[in-house]
Length: 96
Image (tube, rainbow, N blue to C red; front, top):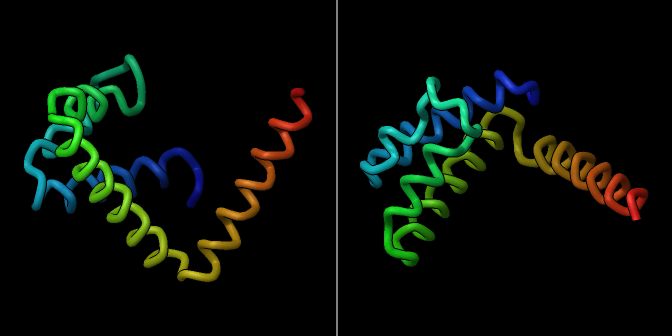
């Protein structure tokens, strides 16, 4: 599920759900946009006032988190994130 397609599906669903309260997110997932995976979202957030952009992003991240914990369950999700975080830290430290 942590393959790129799975994450992309959860991201799209998160955008759909968060767009119910933040309509500007309705067009944040543009599959034709190849300049970056989150370029459309970045553009939309840049068009907002800082406080509003923060509110929108927090809502989106909370929705994504809720979907992930719903798919994996809380403890499994925490274990997965911990292992990813530890690998990231290890690779970052090895690069020094």
